[in-house]
Image (cartoon, rainbow, N blue to C red; front, side, top):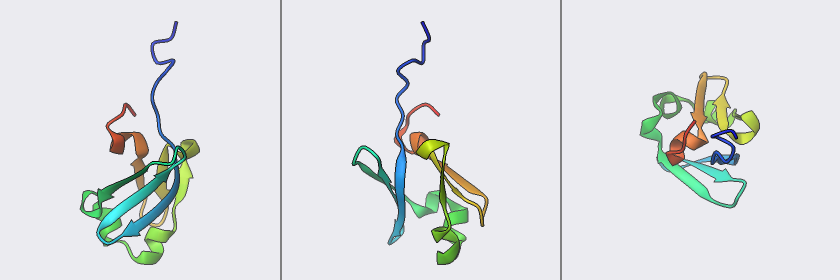
Length: 81
């Protein structure tokens, strides 16, 4: 029996920047946010660079190609990555 058979995970579906926070909408209806200060590349990026993102790993993370930044949803939630 695999130990990680019921590994908890969360999947992103939307991303927005509100004031000084990164806000992520999850497929299960939750929203999580984190201070943009936690992500210096995002903090220093232009609005256009921040707006150019894509989901990776079926929503397990978000990637910003213009600034080569990745954010893991599970890591933000304190779950195993």
